[in-house]
Length: 108
Image 1 (cartoon, rainbow, N blue to C red):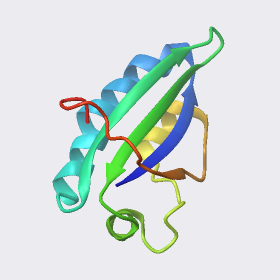
Image 2 (tube, rainbow, N blue to C red; image 1 turned 90 degrees about the vertical axis):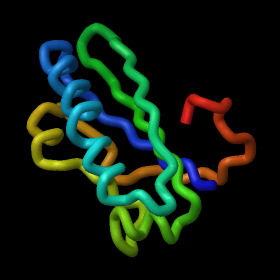
Image 3 (cartoon, one colour; image 1 turned 135 degrees about the vertical axis):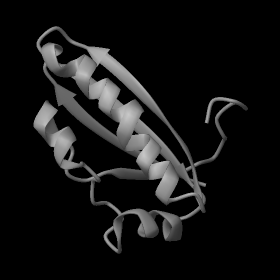
Image 4 (cartoon, helix red, strand yellow; image 1 turned 120 degrees about the vertical axis):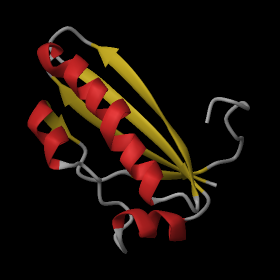
């Protein structure tokens, strides 16, 4: 299993709207179009006062499954236009890790 990690930052004023967009539109759309090899996601949020950081983690069976998601350059970040409107900055590239220990049951 491969873990895909990405971060984006927004203002405190846009944080709730961005969270709603992630959970209500972006991740459901990903799940609907990539059922094979996509295993789920988690979202973490950290408020530093001046900005709010979102860290997303996605799990895939393989790099082949990630290629079905973003194309041959698997490190390309998938940041829809609606998300870009709410973000102050974001990682243009993602990091991939080999999953050595799976998340606890029910969390992925």
